[in-house]
Image (tube, rainbow, N blue to C red; front, side, top):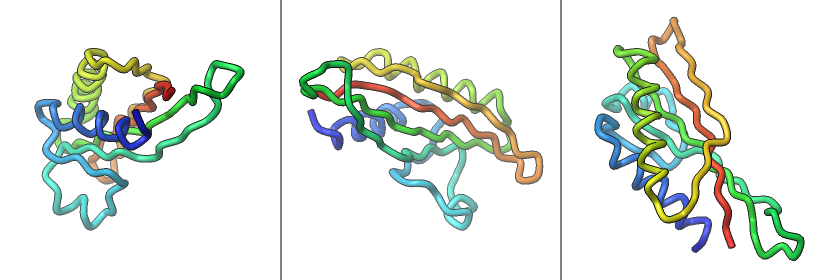
Length: 122
């Protein structure tokens, strides 16, 4: 499996979460966000580094996922993030929730779930 395959798995998982209207493979500009139905998700940065074994046959990978929602607030954002995590746990590859961060911007009315997933590539 390649790095690209991991990103495709994450994208497919997001597309299978009921309620997420669109999935982007990069961060969305404010202009694009204004034209996009919400809630939507973005796949952000992908990082690889040394894994758990000494012979470097394994790499640790991190994928940033952003889920944005407006009008229904942080509760909806957290529910979508939970549904995404449950879907990821059913996949053959092991994905681990490294961190999750939830925020609400009062000025814009947007809520954000920022999730960092960890997996291993052999």
